[in-house]
Length: 134
Image (cartoon, rainbow, N blue to C red; front, side, top):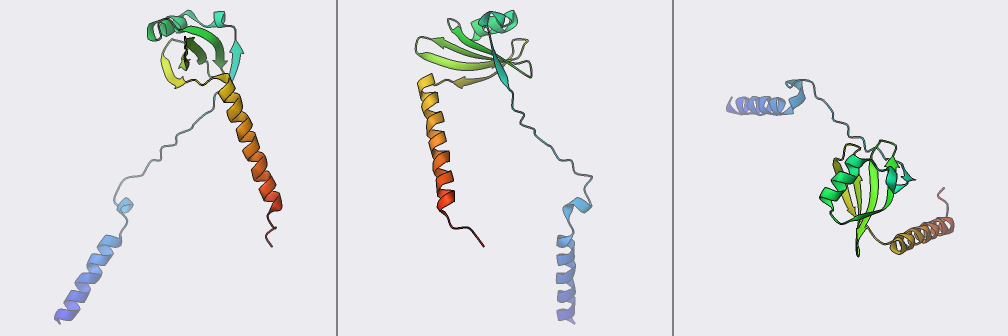
């Protein structure tokens, strides 16, 4: 009789643990994060709004705008420099800083692009050499 009681207790515990937690919880909501890519078009540096240039002068005193870009979302991408220090800074139109990236020289950027192209060509060559799957 004890064996039957132990067996029934084990079954009851297993059933309790097997019930999903969502059955007693409310409806679950899923958060979807969309990473939208912004496309930028180069603009003359004098077309950067005063709110953005004021923020830049406050945040990066002594830096000059080398190139300016306007994003399709209304944001501004500025390549700025002071001596050998170069940054890419992103601002909203109201002057709010979005993010800062450390800039690399254009020569390094070109080298990276050329290296990436060569790697992609090598991958394509390898794909051509591999036997086809049946």
